[in-house]
Every structure is written in structure tokens, then in C-alpha cells.
Amino acid sequence: MQLRYNFRVYPTPGQQIALARAFGCARVVYNDGLAARKAAFEQGLPRISDAELSKRLTVAKKTPDRAWLGEVSVVVLQQALADLNAAYRNFFASATGKRKGARVALPRFRSRKDNRQAVRFTKNARFGVTAAGRLRLPKVGDVAVRWSRELPSAPSSVTVIKDVAGRYFASFVVETTTEALPGVDAEVGIDLGLASFAVMSDGKTIASPRFLRRAERRLRKAQKSLSRKEKGSVNRAKARVRVARVHARVADTRRDWAHKNSTAIIRDNQAVYVEDLCVKGLARTRLAKSVHDAGWGMFARMLEEKAARYGRTFAKVDRWFPSTRLCSVCGLVGGKKPLHVREWTCACGVTHDRDLNAAKNILAAGQAERLNACGGLVSPAA
Image (cartoon, rainbow, N blue to C red; front, side):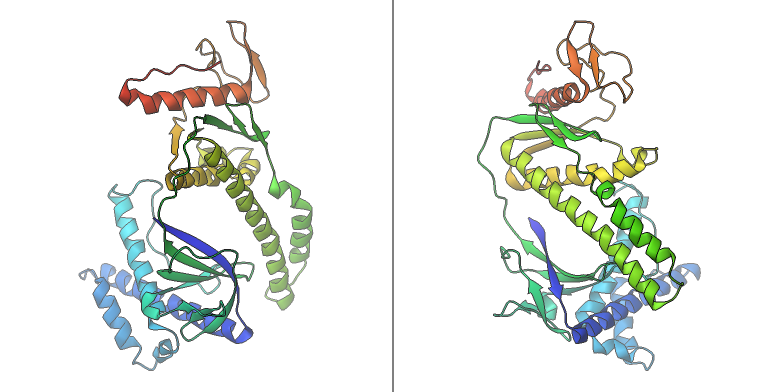
């Protein structure tokens, strides 16, 4: 199993210039390859192969117009072409139906004004970690790293990233083995919501943190300052970074919170079931801001990834399953329940909490789906 380990890095001013040069060269190589393939398609010529693009790069480095490409590691340039090839493969796989999920568009040209810049170094680049704990990058130097934990194995590649807030990160790809946790008897169904982030079938509740809502005052102040700056000025560029840092802090806090809570759920339960919510559809309603702030999709993805890593079971219940309207005691499906209805009474006389009842039904539906192949029978638990 391959995992990514991200660490903050602090390049010196000279190393920042070297990294900016690497970002620019990789972007130019990517755009040159894309332009060549687009021209071949428009002229009706055969598709340019990956090997042909690599040969053209070698020839271009010997010309006066592209001689400066030799100032950066060749591996960075080859990886830029690899990214272009992967983008085309993903597009054709999506167009032919071989790739699941949202449709993938054709590759687009990269801009120097893109919010995120990145270059990748593989083992061929001979990057490494020095005895002093610095990241040694070819034609960049030894970069200071803020290590928060040790790498479990030698990394196969490292991607150096500069985000919109001007921060630098090193993302290592390492090979790890699955770490199965001791088995437990507990299983849980989770109903995700906005009033409470998660209500679980065992009665536990996770309050909604609302990170963006809590940061709105700082964000409003930063955005007002940005709007007053003259376009194209240095002060506007500084104000833009201040806004980006507020957003980055919110995103980092939300991600850290989701990691901690998803890990706790996976550790305490042998099987976890959630509803397959249509987040994109909900994000087009009047609740869009709250839906994006909640981060349901990220949380569910973390649960799925950690379940696979630690030997747990994870499954999604069909989004059309009437978890809210179904009585978890008698199984009777009631009428529609608007969002303002937090409690309702079934015809059998049982009064349900809206979210807890849904969590119990999600648990029962997930168990039934998993045990059906073995002939198991599962009914909603009271």
C-alpha cells in the first residue's frame, strides 16, 4: 500500500528562486507537449507518442530558445511530460467509460498565475534526506524540513508544492503494509448532517465544528482590505496572500479534525456504514455554504481509506434508502420529513429522534447488504 506523508519545508531565498525556476521549466515543458499534441490533432497527423515527446524535449534543450531548461533537473521535466501523458490517459478512459466518477476534461495549459505550483523528483533524481534531517534536491540544495514523524520506509518520490498561501510542502510517497487493528464486536451506522455533524447508531454525537463560520470575521476583514487595494499593485498581492492564509488555516483545521475523528471511529468499530450522500447536488442548494464547510465527502473518504488500511469494513448505503422515514422498530415507512422536523412518532407509537433513527437504519441496511451473500438476516435494532 502506498501512502503520502506531507511535511512543511522552509527553503532559503536562494532555494525559493531555484524552486521557482523548476516550477517554470516544468510548466513550459508541459505546455510545449500539450501544444504539440493539439497541433498534431488539428492537422490530422498521427498521435505523438510519449517517447516522441521525450525525444523532442532532449532536442529542445539544445536550442537557444530552450537552452535554459538545462538549469533544472531533467527528472523534473520528464515528470511534467508524465503528468501530461497521465492527463490524456485519464481523459480517454473517462470518455470511453473505463474510468468511473465525474467526467474528466481534456488537459489544459498551465499558467504561471496558477495558485498551486508543484514539481516531482523520483529516485532517478537521487534526492535524499541528509544526516542532519534536510531534504537534498538536485540543483536546489539542502532544504530544511519540519519533521512531525518518521517515514516508515524509503520514499520512492517526493513532490515539492507551493500553495496559494506561499507555503512550501514536501509530499513523500512511501510503501507501507496494512496494519490490522485488533478485532472488536462493535459496528456503527453514521448519519451525517449540519445541525450535528454526525449522529451514530450507538447514540454518540459529533458536534458540527463549522470552521468557516467561525473564521468569517477574520476572512471578512481580510477580503475588505484586499478589495481596497489597486489591481496589479504589490500591496494587493500581499493582501491576496493574507486572504489565502485565512482559507488555508480553515482547511488545515478541518482536515486535522476530520483525521482525528475518523481514526477514532475506525479504531472503535469493526464495521462502519454511512449514507452515500450526493454532496454536489446539495452544494447547489441554499445550504451550499454549510455543506462545503462540513466536508462530508472528505470525512467519508478518510473513513474508507483507513478502514482498508486497518482491516475494518466500510460501506455506503444507497442514497435513495429512506433512512429518515423508516421506523427502526417496526419497519414502517412514513411520509416525508422536512428538515425542521427533528422528532416524529410512528404509527406503532414509538417516538424517534430524526438523526438517531436514521443512523440505526443505516446500520441495519449496511449489515443486511454485507450479510446477504451469506444468507444472513438483519432487521433494524430498537
